Image 1 (cartoon, one colour):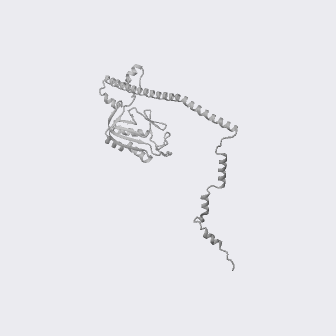
Image 2 (cartoon, helix red, strand yellow):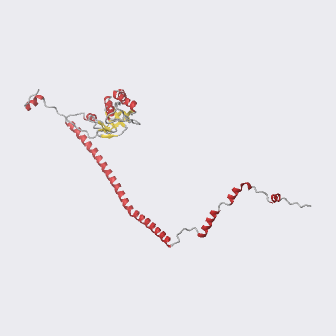
Length: 309
């Protein structure tokens, strides 16, 4: 009877059951062998030679020593220089602080002296007016702007346009001095101030500068000057008077309409409000001017010996 050979494949399957992760052999290999042969050889070489990278030759060791010495010398010199210069810098800083404080104190003393002298001049002016027979000195001082005033009135704020635009040749506001039609000009402030005077204002100030009969509003480049002092926008105009009546009269006047046109056509910003109490300073350094009657024509001709036509 012929002998039958057993089926080896079936016997093998029965002896060694299939692994559940047999289908993921690549992933299994990566997990079990995370380092390839190259990394393993490099690690073995580092283990044989050691991890130190210090130079082995005498020249290399000398170069390394010289570099360390040089670095130490540089660090030491820098620290020494900083330590030496620190007191000098602190001394210079303290001297500068002391100088600033001294100059500030000197400026304060000068300001007090100016106020004192200004009060003395005002007192002498009043006395001189009384000596000349003037009785209503306080009223004259008020009208001349020589004294500070307090009372109700209006507050008018005028400011440049948010985005100023260049003016063209046909623009009525274009001039050789101001080509930017979105900016407040000196003539605009002149019309505003004159409009408030004509509307009944008793006293006016612009950005803290008290106006008098001799005040001038002019331009110097792009700046507006009030009595030769430059002002920066926004321009705050305070006017003493009957607040509601003064506000209405100004807005109905030609100068008030002019300001309204500037708002509509050129973007200039303006706002007016009535105030129950305003404080205006005195005008600084008033100029006293006197006048005397001129001689008659007949007397002049007799004295000079010349006839008149």
